[in-house]
Image 1 (tube, rainbow, N blue to C red):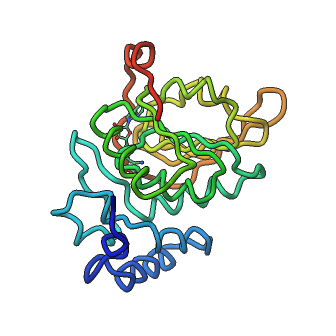
Image 2: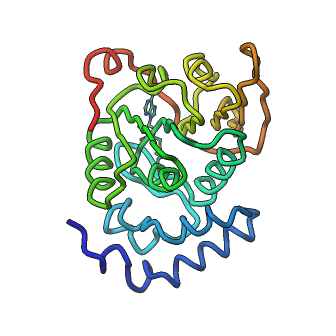
Image 3: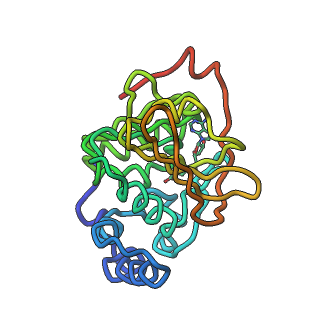
Length: 230
Ligand code: SAH
């Protein structure tokens, strides 16, 4: 179990340090107060290696092993804000790319049920355990290739992807409920895009800003044989 003191943090992981991060995010244009509040509460220092905990409240991406990174707090806030700006209440939401589980913890605060999928087994296991230990009971993690979405739980009121494909996977578009949004980094150079599902299979695409994510990799074997859930 994780002690309340460990969650609360001290010094470079204390509330004061987190509040400074929130001020930086405000300066960079994050306006959604509820998102800022959640960012100030979620203990990002527990989602990174202990040796990097003192840097957890800097506005930077950090390595989480296996060549992957925990996203920069600014981009976590921005993507969450963009998903929340959609017209549908976020009852059922999908995140592709669990990684450390940090974005899931933030997004979980705004979703009735959040499904998150990861293709690297050790990352999936570690994030699942941490999210459980921290008591995020509405988050369900699976070892799965998110290129295929999560057909068993579709349609979703929102989908957030934290790894970048060259083109938007068709399955993700198909699994959006009418009026739902997909927030996804895409292309070369990468840009953050918001896609809204309109009536009759039409979509509206909006380009937000340049971004830098690890690539979305596809492996159909994992999808077919070892899809598991907590
Ligand atoms: N949301 C994460 C960011 C992790 S980086 C966080 O807050 O820490 C992106 C993650 O996407 C990596 O862990 C990578 O393994 C994962 N990923 C890449 N391609 C994937 C795919 N096809 N399906 C599921 N996860 C994928």
